[in-house]
Each structure stands twice: as structure tokens, then as C-alpha cells.
Image 1 (cartoon, rainbow, N blue to C red):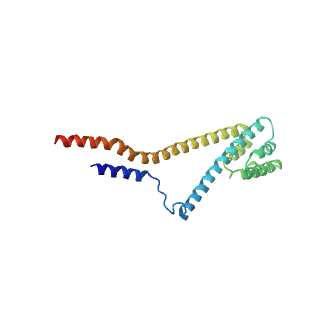
Image 2 (cartoon, rainbow, N blue to C red):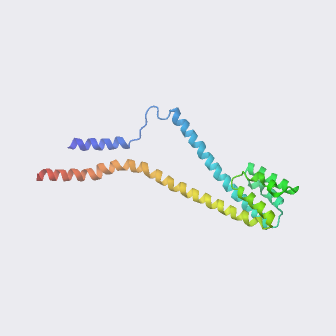
Image 3 (cartoon, helix red, strand yellow):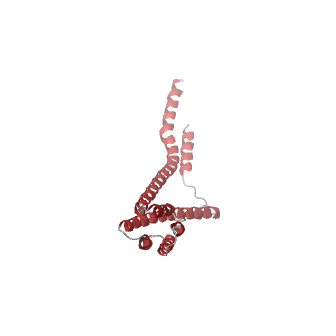
Length: 195
């Protein structure tokens, strides 16, 4: 019976021990998968920073418009805060509006920028209705931040679950060997003496 306990303890130790074989780090398939995963994570992080910069740009645009600047001048003023591709799109919109191009055509370059598609729709609507674009920009910036915050909370919760799984897998054999097994063996010894 003692040898069985020793084998179970040894099996738990082997199960929990990290498995590092001779080619564990040099497998090209794993390396390629890791690089792909890193590239996907960088794209997600880049997308998040792009949306965050869009929110900052929208806040600045709202402040400029609320301060009384004309839309083309306000767009030129917020260009330094925008990402490079968004800055090009904003400059294009500003120049189109300055020369008198219609709002639907002038705001077209902004439609494909992350977080700014709604701004172009609101800008066309406000040009027709005569309402303030500043409130739309401020509201859109707030919603972008809220969505980024919700996404960050989701990722943190997912990370917590993923971190708990390996810990559980390592401690479960130890719990069985050190907590449950001695109780079962003790009960078996008592039952063996009774029978």
C-alpha cells in the first residue's frame, strides 16, 4: 500500500513538472504560431490605440467647434493629435470644405477611419439641419472610450480565467495526494482492522 502512495505522489510530481524537451524551444511550427499570435495582438493593440487617438481627436474637435472655430479650421487644428492616416483624411476634409465641396463628398475620406465613420454621417446631417457638430463629436468620443473600457474589462476577466486554469491543474494533483489520499488510506486502514 505504501508503494501505491509513493507512485501516486511521484505521478503527481511528474504531472506538475514543466515539460522541457530537447526541441521544445526550437520547433519552427510553434515559433511561427507565436509570431502570428504576436502580430494579431499588435494589430488589436494598434486598433485600440487608433480608437483612443480618435477619441482624443474628437474631444479636441468638439472643444474647437464649441469655441467658435469654423469646421475647416477646427479640423486643421486637431490634425496633430490624430494618427497619420486619420490626419491625412482630416486635412482632405478640411481642404474640401474650405473650397466649398458638398458635405457628403467632403466628409467621404473620414468614413473608413476607425471611430470616425459616425462623425462623417453626423457632419452631413448637421450641415443640412444646422445643428451643432460639437455635441455629436463629444458624444462619439465618450462612446468610443466606453467601448474601449468595456473591451479592456472583458480582456482582464478572460486573462483571470486563463491564469487560474494552469494553477488549478498543478495544485489539483497535490491536493489529491496530500489532502484526500491520506484520509482515504487512513479510513482503509481502520476498515481493514475492523474486518
